[in-house]
Length: 244
Image (cartoon, rainbow, N blue to C red; front, side, top):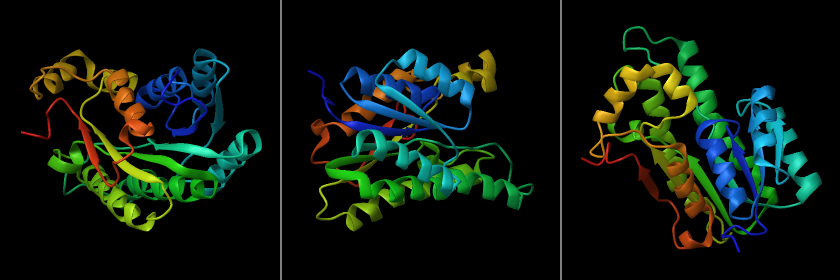
């Protein structure tokens, strides 16, 4: 018997990386999962690998119409929702002095506005005892060179959990932040290259990057009743990067 038996979950940014690893873990624990992402090819590949308890909806968290389609699909097939993992995120390096309005808009539209509407539009479907998980980042605590917009957006996500825990009083719905450090996703490995991965690995006391499955394990904990007395919390899964 899995810890998420009978639960219905939505995972944004669910086709690859941490999102896909979480989808696999949730399904292994008994959940039915809707993954949401922008690339149809990646979504199709993920569903083929995840099996019959996965569904995919194509769209962007920065587009409210796309989110409406996502939750319409959830309602039509499963009627209710227990877990929202607002995992979709975006970020790129631009140093102070060269930051553009377009860069700010792109980052905040996904990481802040997208997170807000991913959660807000889910609420009518969520049952008492539901769990909302927001993906933060070690960068939201420590900052990172040339990552002003990304770091600020993830600091905002941390505050959303604190505020929403107050807003959700009496609903039985919990909201927490999962903050990874450097994680060896497909995208990260491609962007960093072998040498870049070594640099990030050396920054942590554990001297390595995280495997996406390690982040997914903590997401499953936050999704399950094992974390039933946790809300407004941040769980750092960063190899100690932001803790020292």
